[in-house]
Image (spheres, rainbow, N blue to C red):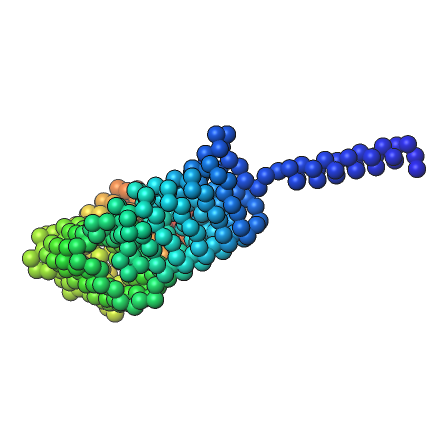
Length: 420
């Protein structure tokens, strides 16, 4: 062997040895310099024992550790930060030490095999929805000596019973009656609960927060009682089995998208003495009738004439309505809000009356049966993707020199026809 070949061989062997030594010396986890916070774990073990002295399990510390089945936490742990165990798909159980004081939002999000959890007595703060998307979780228990939280039939509440924090998604109930005394259904409390078909709220419930029942696609019935004041954004998003909704007289606020994508709702009914809302032919309006808030997209109607006094078509009011082939907008309409007719896939033509000034973002996106879109000279603003160019090319018809013409030219619309 030549001298140069020996040098090359020796160099290669040295590099390989150096790499092997480096690889064995690299830790699968990292702890802060003071030893109090676990920053991350990226090992492949089924069991990991967190070192003594660690007080905080950091944000995303165990993110996507799919091989972990068990994590042993030391008694020193006080805080579990948001998304600490994000999508640890193999963890079935975890024992929270007695000294834990705070569990942040989404701490165990996506731990799909987690079956039970017990909240220790010293936990003072539970933020947001720490057990979001834990589909196997059958019970959330709480130490009886905890002064801040309690468990009733495996459901997590504040100690005074006024806030329902988290329903265990793995519970096999089809019906659930929220206990008397509850005033608030917290954000994402029932989100993605696929088993519940019916839920009854007590008269004391005042607030249903954002995403509270989002994705409860088996829910056929929800009973709202007098005393309910507010229904949050997307509170019942995707509850595709709901057929009717009664709005009590006490409801003062229904936020945007509260019943978005509820594809089976055939009627909204507002109590006659409700001061903020009214219903007409199953359609929900503001009390003065000037804003159309929500159309029941499960209705079998193939045409609808919006009442003459309507000024605003609300956020996603008709979104996803697949039965309507024709809709008539009144002359008083000034604004068509975000996504108002999004994915109304059977609409054959779109005629926007003179007087409309604003067409919101995605207002007519996905109306892929429309062959004609008439836009008047009164329109001064058209939001992004208001008309979706990805479907069968429709012809925009608008007065020459109008904002609509400039919009069509700017967005590269294939077919534009000037109106005299």
